[in-house]
Every structure is written in structure tokens, then in C-alpha cells.
Length: 94
Image 1: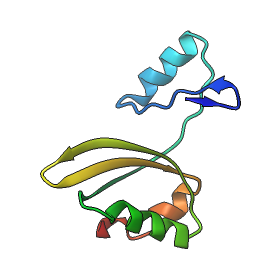
Image 2: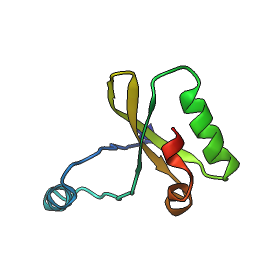
Image 3: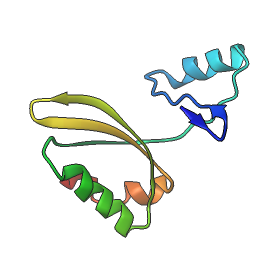
């Protein structure tokens, strides 16, 4: 995507160390961000309920990736501005 005239690539990796080393080797600047992973029923309104819970806790969603959808559930990777506060919420209810 493009933000303020600069190209930005956001990615998920299963090997943080190898990814970090490769990006450093090729000289690309990068930032790392811890994310939440949440599995919720794949039905209308479920993501809205989750976003409302975060909003009520004054936590902003910065990024959402769909990791997988199967058997009536969706697994999401969610980047937020206050990760520690978000991890203290009852995420298991979704």
C-alpha cells in the first residue's frame, strides 16, 4: 500500500529471525509489531462486536489479516496500538 507517498509492505512470518536477517541483508528498513491472533465464528457482526470491545477499551485497530477460514470460523491476525491492554481483554469469548 502507499502511505504519505511511500510504499509500505505489511507481512506475517512464521520465522521472525530469518525474516529479520533477510530484510537486514538486503538493506530494507522495517518495523516489527506484535499481533493478536483471534479465532471467531464466521458470521455477520462478529468482527464488529470484537472491534466494539476494543473501542470500548480505547484500543485502535491498525491492521487486520485473515489467516484462515474453515469449518465456520475465521482466524485473524490483528495489529493494535495498545497490545498489552488488548491481551488483557477476554479474547476467548470470540
